[in-house]
Image 1 (tube, rainbow, N blue to C red):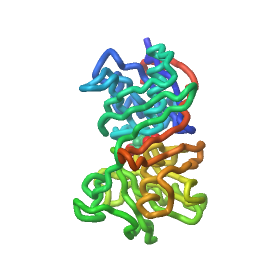
Image 2 (cartoon, rainbow, N blue to C red):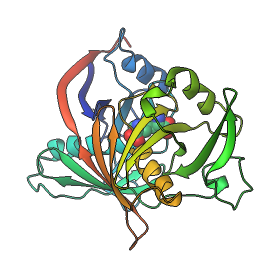
Image 3 (cartoon, protein in one colour):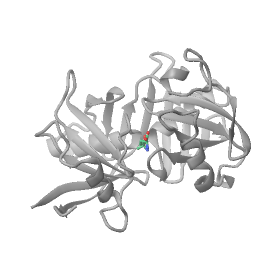
Length: 283
Ligand code: ZDP
C-alpha cells in the first residue's frame, strides 16, 4: 500500500502530482501534503497538486496545497505540470491539445506545445483592491505604484491578482534584495488580509524583466508562474515594459503576453517530468 505520485517541475518550481481522477476529494489532507513536501522527511516539493474529476464545463479539476499546507486559488507553473501529467495519463498523442481545468480561480486553459512546453491562457488579471485583496486603496480602486512601508523602508507597490494575490515592486537590482528577511514581512503585512506573494522586478529592457519571488505559503522558490504574469501586468501598468516580455526567474525564463484583444494573460514555459514514485502510507 502506498500513494503513487509523479514529480514534475516548472523552472525548478517543483510539485508532487497525484492522480485523483476517481474521487472529488483529494486522497491527502493538508497536513499529509505538508509532510510530503518536506525536503528532509518527505519527497520534497513546493506543493502537492491533485488531478480531480471535472466540475461544470471542464475536463478536470486542479487543487493544490502549498508546502505550508495552505491552499492557493491557482498555480501557474503547477498547471503546466498538470497538463503534461494529464497528457501522459490520457495517452494524448495530440501535441497541441488544450485542456479546460477547473480551479479556484475559474477555468484555466493550458495548451501543450510539442514535447515539453505549455502555453496557458491564465484568464484576465484582477486589479481592484477588493479583488486582490488589499486595504491599500478603497475597494473599487487600483493599486499602482503606491507607497507601502515594510521592514522600515518605503516601497512603491503595484497589486495584481491572477486569482491569487501578488504585490509587485520594481527595484534597481533584484539580486541585492534580502528576500529571506523582507519576503515574510510583505507576506504577513496587515495590508493583505489573505497574505500575499511578493515579486521584486528589475526592468532590464522593455521586453525583458528579471524577477525574484517570495511566495505566500512556500517562501523562496525558483519560479512562480502566476507571479511572472502579475509582474508583466504591473510593468505594463507602470509603463515600464511592452505587453509581451521574457521574464527571467532564478530557475529559467517564461514568455508572458498580456493580450490587448481579450485582456487575457498568456504564459509559455517548460514543464518537466522528473520521476515516478510511491510513498509509504505512513505519512
Ligand atoms: O498563491 C500562493 O499561495 C502561491 N504560493 C501558489 C503557488 C504559485 C506558483 N508558484 C505559480 O507558479 O503560480 C506555483
